[in-house]
Image (cartoon, rainbow, N blue to C red):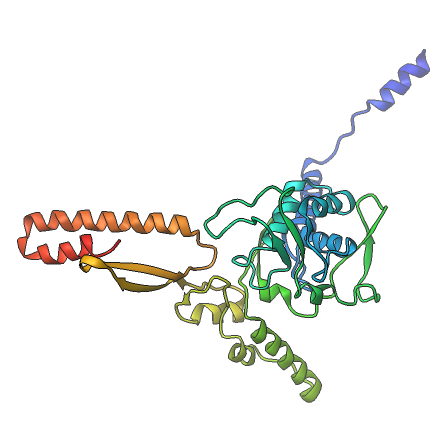
Length: 320
């Protein structure tokens, strides 16, 4: 009886620990997990772990550009069961994001079906949509089976997955990325593929031919500013150049517009290119609200100042 009582005491023993050290250790472990395994991309292939696992699952399925599209539910299921046990919604979200041409300058997935829209409409359920690797994604996975990168065990050590993909081009710069981790964050805009490749070639040539490092100013002459998939006008290059030199900068984008005449002397503003990640429907509603607000202000000004009526009428009724 005493032995059983002693075993119970030993099993329920309370240990005194330093709260500060315990919190520091636990928080650091959590932070590193979020930084390395969730939110931030690897600079070598520009992919977050979930994106890399989706692409690798598609490779294993033989879901290449020369094959028919396959149901996204199958791709998500394989990814979740073999490599990424964190829920199907996050996996499908990453898959959809890689197939949206208004989000990625060089989409890595060729989607078939409703993958959302620039208006912010959600994609169809994964049981309806289909996908396969895009042509440029084959440059991300080329020579994967030739011992070019390291492989590591998956979460239950029943499969092996690549630590990084053998990307043949700097995908981190071409497609950009956004991520918020613990104590760290990144927001890299997309860049033109031709300019980025030319910059990489310049770095290689300087090292091979002249045995020297490449100065940032040399690269700025080649890559002058980001290149966004939805177009738009960059207002000056100072912000981009500051980002290239210091790692921090601000790029201001403006939509491309044109004023077209209509009947009865009216005009309309036609927007042909939107700033990056701007919702078209939200932008349209805000524009109409601003026009109505300005028209109302101009009408009140006309009531007290008749000489301003012509200008007010032009403001009130000249744009739709």
